[in-house]
Image (cartoon, rainbow, N blue to C red; front, side, top):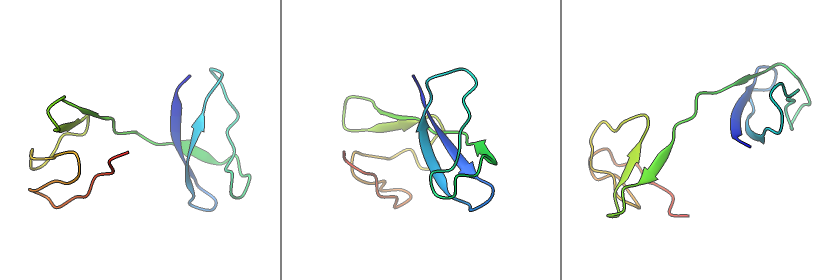
Length: 78
């Protein structure tokens, strides 16, 4: 069962939803609107050496477990 990311077109809330069926009726948890769209998600994973890779690619290629030395991004370490 995948988790999808959605954006509410009414209140601009971004949220995640665990989807149990092929044609779910998703509504925004903030305003209960059904005018939502699924977002394109980015997947990242550890390469095993403390480095992270992303399906979106990296502009600098030097990301580590806690930060990106090249672009300055801070990554969560959960």
